[in-house]
Length: 188
Length: 323
Image (cartoon, rainbow over all chains, first blue to last red; front, top):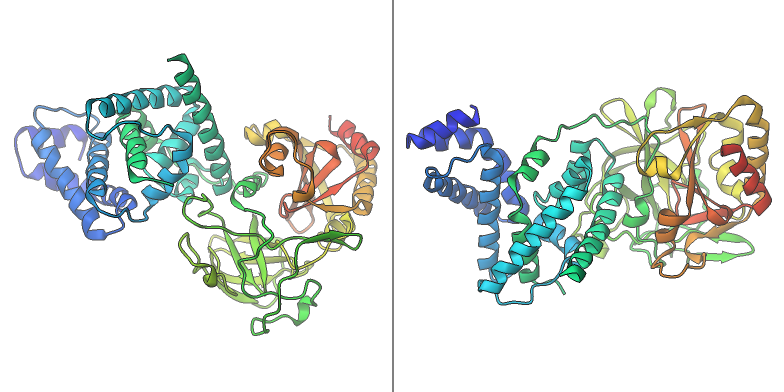
């Protein structure tokens, strides 16, 4: 079913909307959640929570395309859950983020306060600016790794490169990101 | 130390990027992997952390007769990596698949104390295989403890075989269901004195060479595919270079002095010193890929821990041929 048809079901407050979305995108959402949460039950619950969140958000939201919006909600649900877990478990998400950490500034504020929100926003803007400097292929590689937490093998299959090429690209992209962020910092 | 809050900070900031970026990443069409493209093993330098300590628990003498090896042989100590007048002994690779080392994708397996690392994938029609040597169990992942790095373990699963014309203690093949053959090159377990020990004894480059192509480092890195073919009038000059290559001494890549600011030799080799990638097609369909670096260093891309240093005049003559 197309985005528009599913959205129409949401707007009509039909329970079929959730069923259709679950049928169409459920497996991908679950795969995404699993990369964040090693526990299968946690991952499944996050997907359910995301679908519920969507149910509450539409209307008034009219997200087209629907899929990236849904993935974003799933990812946020996973992050929220991870924050509430006492001990961080190893997951594809943790591995990917640990790769990226040395290349990004550490937060210098208390979570959930105003300055934290400002810091998030600034880094988001810088990330967007950085992504805009990349070729389409490199942008996809970067996001598949650090947004979707895909494995190198999965990225290689998607973009038609060898895993090792993906690895080299990501190493260079991380270095490039660090330089980009340093320059931004200097200019501010 | 990695803290969840730092992780969360980055993840949250990245998570809020505009959905148009996500759309692009979701919609990006999968392309067919082009196995005929030149091998791009450079990344191994970033994934394969060449170290002096072996994580393998089973080892064999460096010059063991390959015909006599079997999977039931008893373990002996791993030879230390060394460089002396008698040659260089490549260090057993320190295969760190630990989380955060970003090497979780590297295909390899351990057999008879040697670590076989993925080299290339070729059509199987020209290759003759011997009897099955073993089955890689694929039991190693990012969280395998060091004592899990045992015989037949690795990051890939499948039966592997010796290939006719190659020393099995150097090269093994793993047939794939799609009719291709994945090749794995042993990274340790032998000593190399001159280029001949690698390019003549183990790869028979001169005898089997059917064509030579090359591309600049930039073309290779940017995947421009700007491949040139060696003309027939230059064949003799190239053969002469191969002769020099075989007579030139081997050195451990890690023994090459670092240039300013470099954290490892691979940093400047792959970032600044790369000149050409040279592809020597053998008559069995396997391509021997050479990396040419400043300083006259020549590296077989399947064994990055060892370089051969060619005399400056001979190296310049080769560069003149390629340029």
